[in-house]
Image (cartoon, rainbow, N blue to C red; front, side, top):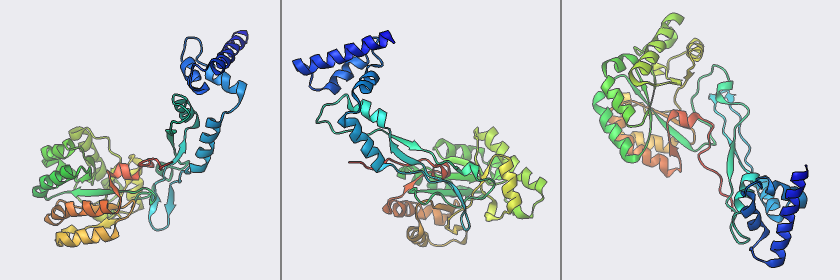
Length: 331
């Protein structure tokens, strides 16, 4: 206690000297200079306790209260089933204040932010399918289901590379077993790799044992061939029931479907796909496609249409996470 009192006296004496002599532009600058000195790591805290809040700290606290964005909890929607939460934002008052002390009275405050996670996350909702991301998060994902169409994979990868977009490829296990090198090329280009069962069955018609085998065989291949620790299961043809969801959940996987379908297996024109996606895409949309001539030809146009709406493209994991894309602008 004696030592702390001595330190406080020394700090206050120094501040008084600074004010009288005028050797430093402001008390804030003085504190910045001394708080990192030997034996004075708590000088700032002692000064604050002794003198109370200054105008700078008060202004930062006011701005923090004014600009705070509350997190949004994950929820189970009647139509869309499980919807991820979305982090909030708040100004880190202490970090912002300490950073601002390094400037002068005319320096614009550089606010330091931190994200605030929702109390209820996607993982807390239990075994429910996911069809979309949080509508407050301006991100969109391409879900590319692969069980055939090898000739279109490299052209699609080249377009994604050119446009600097990462997608999520859901691999049929029997395809992966036969096409390990092509799968490694997809992975090498930075895309997310996930589970699309083993033999493209209608999951709702399978016994529990067979359904588990379909998922586990592909999961094993993903790990052994690609070193992937996977989080997602996309049922072939979108066919599933609650038993499917429960089995996937018991294996640590979330069942994921799509928000918008290119229906590219019907061989529509690429232009019609671009028009459809451009008209209907919105924040949180998961877009289903396959390696087909239609989707390969539409890919660049889809990306342009999505970006024209101010939306960002990311993987399924990125879109379904509660992580915010950027901090709100604060003047």
